[in-house]
Length: 262
Ligand SMILES: Nc1ncnc2c1ncn2[C@@H]1O[C@H](COP(=O)(O)OP(=O)(O)OP(=O)(O)O)[C@@H](O)[C@H]1O
Ligand SMILES: [Mg+2]
Image (cartoon, rainbow, N blue to C red; front, top):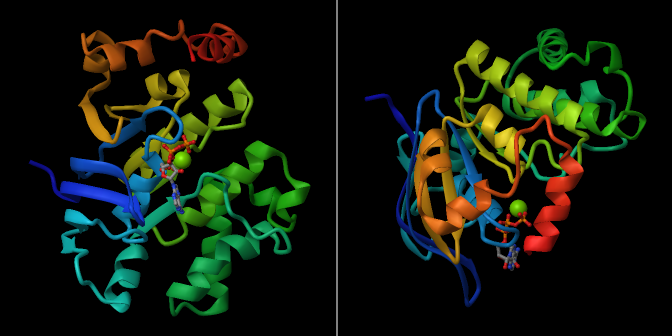
């Protein structure tokens, strides 16, 4: 069996008095690409926060890259986080800095490399996402898709073993979203990374997922292969995957259908 990079055992996560997720058992293995699905507000981003120790579980245990997060000190946690790439829901680039400076941030912060080596690495990371020509531009000067790729380059800066992506293709047009999906797949095979991706885009899920985890009503309700997700009789999963035809169909319609179905 391949190495387990992230393990949650009977985990509850929430904010103050509110429990968002409970009884969560989850294992993410080396070189797997798992997509987390579920309706807005069901706790997908909360799960990612738990995975990297930004949010401590009220019940249960979380192991990240072999280390138990319970009671872990900030120094050890920060060392672990260096090995995990994070692509936030909004991208979270710094608008006043160039793309190259944004990508250099984690390298300056976490590595002891000299400036020349950092510059070469930044160029390499930007080349991986096809942005070397835009390295001196700032995020507001880029398109939405380019900003996503720049944020991806930054999350790859430290060569993460595990990459966590929160809605990487949200807000992109279908062609750009499909290109970003392909980029994730290419990077994963080139860098042998594991990915945990949050997505609600069915086309994207079909394109990238090995495995699908669904959250609903505070619980994990499904955890199996993409193939099983399409053939399951579990109604909440079936409803999710039955919303639309294949990616080649207009995406606008599936959005409309989503509204109609609620
Ligand atoms: N910082 C916070 N403080 C208090 N409650 C929060 C906080 N962040 C999220 N929540 C609540 O936790 C629940 C789950 O939120 P979360 O962001 O995990 O949902 P999500 O599945 O990522 O949704 P979306 O698909 O819209 O991004 C929601 O009810 C939300 O209001
Ligand atoms: Mg979210």
